[in-house]
Length: 405
Image 1 (cartoon, rainbow, N blue to C red):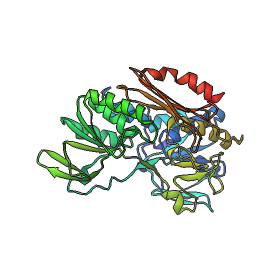
Image 2 (cartoon, rainbow, N blue to C red; image 1 turned 45 degrees about the vertical axis):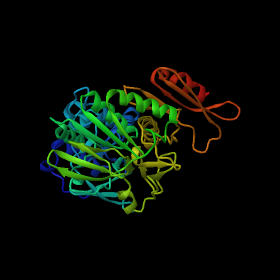
Image 3 (cartoon, rainbow, N blue to C red; image 1 turned 45 degrees about the horizontal axis):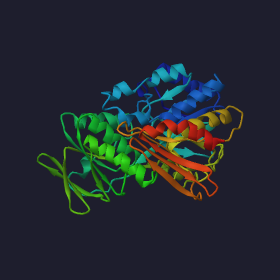
Image 4 (cartoon, rainbow, N blue to C red; image 1 turned 180 degrees about the vertical axis):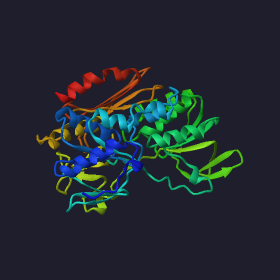
């Protein structure tokens, strides 16, 4: 292995150098994980549950602090800063998990023939490589003098920047009424901000919820003060003397102090694609999480397994457990239990387990005063999925058991 790493290039100092020496001695055994998000660190923890000694190096472009990304969209009302969301430093994670963590180290290329990754600080040979690259915000595509100032929150540094931008401000415009947009809208309005949400669909989360459930969520957030702009998209953001002017596709304008884009995420695939690793929407892998390239695996928001990209916590956890077993000598295909998506909107909570794509049947919707229960059944009445809102979310576990059975 060739490397130019030194204590001055890594905040982990001597522990990093010790790890590099171990890599040099046993590169064929070394597991290299690229990415320090929830996927990368969860995999590392699962590996250590099964094997305390196999050498593991985790490479990350940021500072490697451990935090849960889903908490970014509901931390404002709780008064949590970016520092408060980080539960452990990279050095602490390295010590606790008996691993080498290389921080501020960006991977620029993968040589799948020589089984090496190239970083800005040298090469690292691997026995098994795991890509836990995550996803990037979809570009907002807005025109205007203020478009460059539109924010997105996709990691801890983004959240810190967002917290700084809204400090002392009042009016926030959120672009996108999907899961992240709804969660941020709830969090912001609860924290005292005036919130506008611009959403192309006719109700929030329209790809996940039937209209009755989506409308109930919209109404509940509106009661808190969220102003919805359904069937609309942003066209430009112009800088103004007192903030920004968000112009919609119908010519309507919204005055804002800060604009947040939450229109969706796109799996990070460029590094894999450049290396000749097959990609589709995500990095393509089988149920062993192995890509089309030998000894290269993918996990988390960046992976597409048998055509499915599932950027949620529960699939990630199932993937990490299965892949850890595979990497430590017990090949284990990932198997997903019934996994409802939980939308963190305290104004009106939502639990959704959509039916499989192409499932025959339809929705049976019951609307009560405090919640909506929508059951998707086939022609024989067999439960295939559900959406529960408000007080009806208490039925979630029983319905999960029914589907599992």
